[in-house]
Image (cartoon, rainbow, N blue to C red; front, side, top):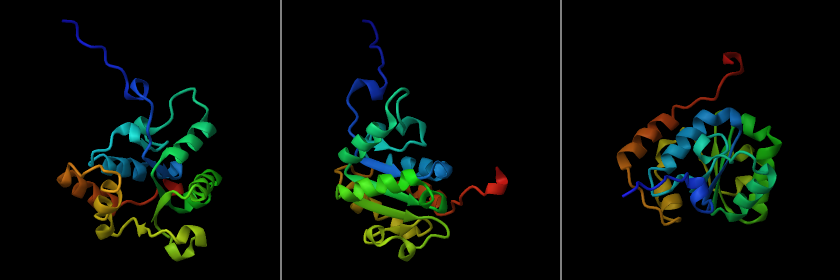
Length: 176
């Protein structure tokens, strides 16, 4: 019997984005950890849109604006990674405004030097968390995974990634 030819996930079925991660590309190390954390639940790679992480980004040749708009329309949850770079990004604010207008569930995660109370009122109204608040990460099970019907499958790996996330620091301009 001939082995079946493997077809990449992105071409085998239409993408059904459940989580859209809005972020600055300068924070790619953080969002890589965040996508790893999300995959400890029963989420498939094609259910997470995060443009800075290779297996969660856009396919070559796709129209960027239309694709992202469709993903925001389709997703159930938008996770906003809010750092100084993200708040300076027109694209991030556009994505978050689109999600707000569509009444999407928005989970803000603030990075260093950003306080929830310093955010615009429409963004501040969504209950969020600081990236370094370890206990809040454990709310992902009831507030994200369970709401999507995606149970946590790898608890030990989840805990290990949380330990890495709370230690994360943005890239310093002088290090580049």
